[in-house]
Length: 470
Image (cartoon, rainbow, N blue to C red; front, side, top):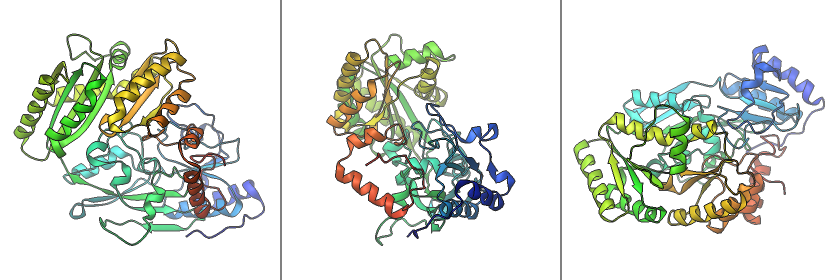
């Protein structure tokens, strides 16, 4: 699919001169203050010193820029919203790599209600895509804390998850087709609305989750769904984590396909929110060790949905799986419950930050993993507070340790023992490369490198990310 390219003489200075001619003066930013907004990520843990920031305004300009970089052997780092947590969109080294921003590619190209599909360019903010779907009476279900600033190119590149994965799946499940610029500048026109296409390799799945190492996504055709008109939300206080596995099973049994989200957080996290942020209050009259936020949605029969949730709450309390439960009486209270959960990252920041671990384990192992990790981190980092929360309906645990330097090796070792993943939804980037090397078998790593070498023989696409050194 990709033609081998022999780099021409001249290198970076000549390439930058040609890029300015191709993109115009405003399309190439020097690595100064003007470029600073395009060389950051959410955690700001790594330095970033690009040779330049490219700002193409169309797929054709992206293709022209990548072709020039391939011609002169210049590494290209794709950049979207800058909300990543693992350094995946930052240039490495000093002044040797160019950053290519897709922010100017920000059009909703089409909304096709008959196909339950929408095509958006890579620079579109996720919240804008949600609103475009809503105007058509439909739902784009990707739900993220950063949805007001993250962009479609970034969520596709990292296979983002979020709180609706339980019902709608990861980004991988929401993409019907892609348009992408390959490492030699060719454009792959793969935008389709087909649900069934049994014709060999699924090329879009190679690019989803590849973190820009195989090419640059410029547009995506996304799945839409009927828009729920009714929502039932409740907050449960758990006696302990032993209740979690039977709770998850009962929620699936009683709420069936209406079950949208199951969000776990602990007392440490709730105290952080109450202590560090204004406008929040404890929904219960006394503290509890763990809390579970439950949401179910439906397109019709709101009364029936409310009755199902009431039956679920009665069952969990009668079985002793919850010591207290508060249903949201209206949408304002539902938003308040969700706000508690969604405020956890900001409360961590206000407390000085945390060493973050976005991991996943099998559903039946969540409680055992969390207890084992808490004990191991307490031994390795005495006195370090642990803020554990996550989308437990799909096994995703955010095990964050405040002032917990040295906790990562402990947690990743346990993830391996429990048959989990060192990255559930935030990608690998730079910060998790070595953890990936420990988590994947030599054969798996060899296969990943084979794919990379086949599509990007020069190795210019986001080098140093995702794949550990051989």
